[in-house]
Image 1 (cartoon, helix red, strand yellow):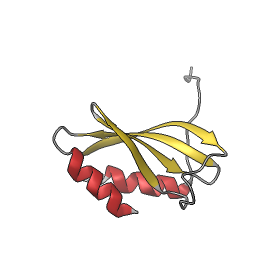
Image 2: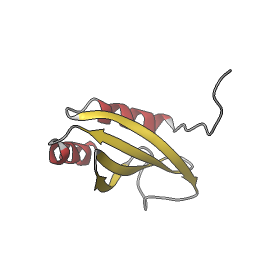
Image 3: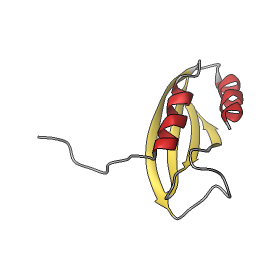
Image 4: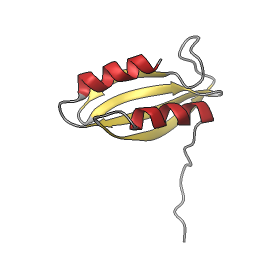
Length: 92
């Protein structure tokens, strides 16, 4: 029997941005979290990603979707935090 629960998906622009992040050296993976409709990063385009804070194992971030914000957790290899953060900033 298939598992049940919340289905988390995101827009095509956000999926492309996530794929670019996953391709960066030092990134283990990106976990898609909750989405919040009606919220904004403040004039950012769809697919824009903003790192909110560093936590053990990676970064908490959000991406702008067509309908609101989508939470992300970006898993990072130990010692690659600064390099990955700089690379994500350059994706903008």
